[in-house]
Image (cartoon, rainbow, N blue to C red):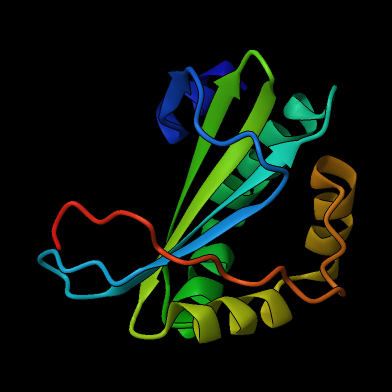
Length: 142
């Protein structure tokens, strides 16, 4: 597990967001000219090892299937583990032509066991509607 953690995740110590859920849309104007959605979810206390095991299954055992779901939704996903004194969080970014629509398609195409894992690790009911997207406050390229 530690090898996967070191090789698959960018791990930072410090503070990022302390909200339970934080979503943002950023019209990223880099080389890709793709839009981006960023979101952060808590890892419930005592569930980091469960989350790491889920990520190992997704990024090693089922990588081709996980990648195909995201590609089929028109998304490029990045997942980060953020460890803070206030608890651990997952930071996700999704880039694509229409990442909000792609995210909805990806969620619909995920296997049922993923929804059970999201409830266990994050307390996230994937059958419920997502929270509204917030307003972009700062963009260093605009």
